[in-house]
Length: 365
Image (cartoon, rainbow, N blue to C red; front, side, top):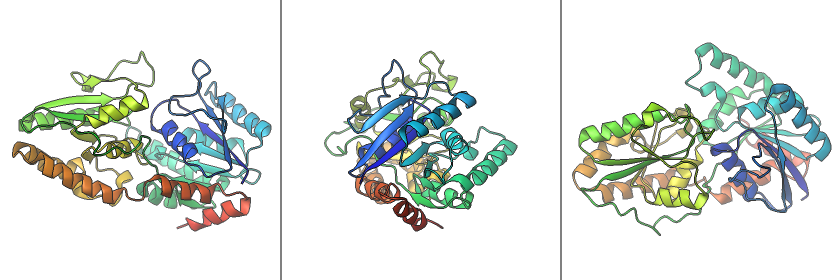
């Protein structure tokens, strides 16, 4: 297999570049990669591990015209076997810039833009319509989670195929190697991992922490991550909550290992790698009940499981609750591992166009 995949990524921090990096790390043999991404001081984002099989190109300005020109120029120069656009804006620019009849275009939404709860109803309707029409120039929509796959099958009816490339953890599994050290009666260490942004909804995280404290539970709250811009002020909702700033991968793993309860507060997602990383670190986890977590056990959500958690802590039964929580998560994410991801990538990045078309058809609704 000799395949060159050109990845279009429009941000240097957060879950999208981490997801693209895991795709590269877990890609099948014989696949080379070029990544067009914003470069700071000429260096690739921390999410990526530079290697001989990866070339990095600076996206530069994200103004529409320059962005369009950059994608077209790279496609002409590199002549990739596949262009893989990650997230909504790269998905739009790539499909406006190039023809999927000349080069296969794979689009991974990592959270469809029309699911943004901060946008107006009219805006979300318009974005959904654009996504549907752009399916006419899409070889494959590669969803990253069960919920996103269901949405992609509905909105991508004009695309030539829809498939699932499951997200997987970006840190090594060390569940059981470390202990959070939680003792009944001590402060509960609660964390959230991600960019400080409206999508991740710090206000929801703060509301959950306040609810725990009103119940009488002592809480040490930490937001693992930071803003997109270093000088961007933090929202008022994070007042009194420790914000770590962006950490190296090993330090993220250590912060998660010290967590008694991981709470994922995002208002919309594709499927968050942060949750998979928390699971890999052995955390007990409660998530917001959003469409990304299709088919989830209600006891694994904040809405359905927080009261039981509070009762367990108050009754000195945290360990039993955490063990049950982790067992339920083991079942829910059983297909979101390296083997399943590599099999999916082999299917969609096949060595020939006919193989890619077969992969696309295999995931059609």
